[in-house]
Amino acid sequence: MKVGIVMGSESDLAVMSEAKKVLEELGVHAEMRVLSAHRTPDEAGAFARDAAKNGIGVLIAGAGLAAHLAGAMVANTILPVIGVPLAASTLGGLDSLLSTVQMPAGLPVATVAIGGAQNAGLLAASILALADPELAARLQARRAQMRDKVLAADARVRGA
Image (cartoon, rainbow, N blue to C red; front, side, top):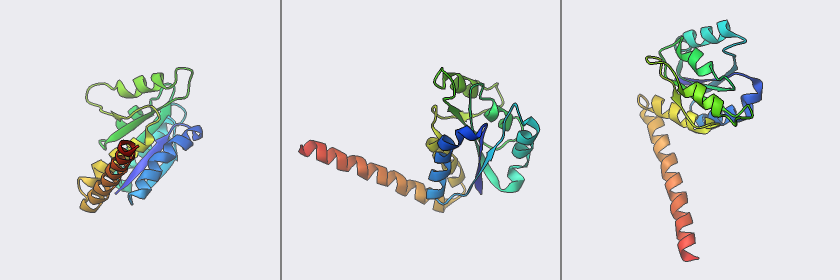
């Protein structure tokens, strides 16, 4: 099973690549696309509708400004959709956060922090890990590495 990563503009690539990077580190294939909820609505809808039959198990949608891409995805699939609000305006992404998180009842979009593509990738991996024990073990190992890093820093600070 792979993850579909969709962004509304090529200018979002630097942030959204963080989701792909963490997924690849965990051994999860990710497909990246640029599709706009407003400029390419037919293509965006078709991508979401066809995602499951194309081997995608989770969708990540990153968008700024009006940030309707995650909503466009969830309107066309029952797959889990994770929204990544992007800072693309003078409001620093708050507009995108509100657009992404304020979905109507019955159309859920899990939403991470503004620019939180890495966490979106980790959340997508966690969802896929429910049916993939090997992926679950890789996620556990990643958490153990994080723990060890913090404990090493704690030891250094206490020794200072």
